Image (cartoon, rainbow, N blue to C red; front, side, top):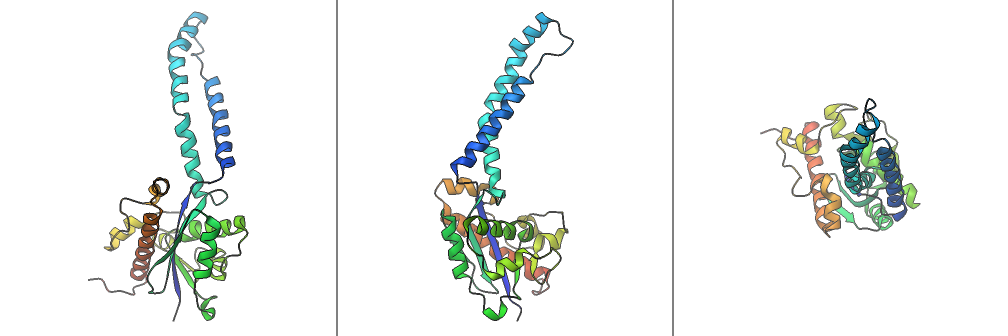
Length: 247
């Protein structure tokens, strides 16, 4: 029997203070450059230019300064999509028709080790297991591979093999987003579930709210959401491969 590993991860921004400091310094430089670029229209005389700077120019500069913290926070949050600095806080998976399982925590090294130790793919299937996920080829597998490198942990052979697969090698990786939309196009898992009449995994937590939920002490709920994503991906895969009948 062909072995399928349904997979999903949840990521959060960099947990290193130096990364946040670098972002703040970069944004401070951008702010100073933007402020320095505030100028009165070139056809204004000296008196009109001075008045413009005292009124409209000052307002523009105030707006730039007011948006600084939001700009820093936005750039910081985007590191959750960058395997160089972002961090995995939850890994969810299910082997064939097993119940979804998760490992979670704020110590990423422990999360990766626990996942590798818990991934009980039979030895005979380790080189033939197909990983199934939504945007799993471009994001989840690549992020996992990168974070294993950062943490100095050798990934499970199934993950290492799949991370090197091409998007069209469906016997190695079946990416539900790619198989539905094609390489380079996108569809959300929520929308795909709705199209196929499958219960959406989304609740009051979705991918855009993971960091806020983690900060609020709701990591267990994030793990539950990840498990629902795993189950949703499995149901989508079964539909896309004609393994279930449509009522």
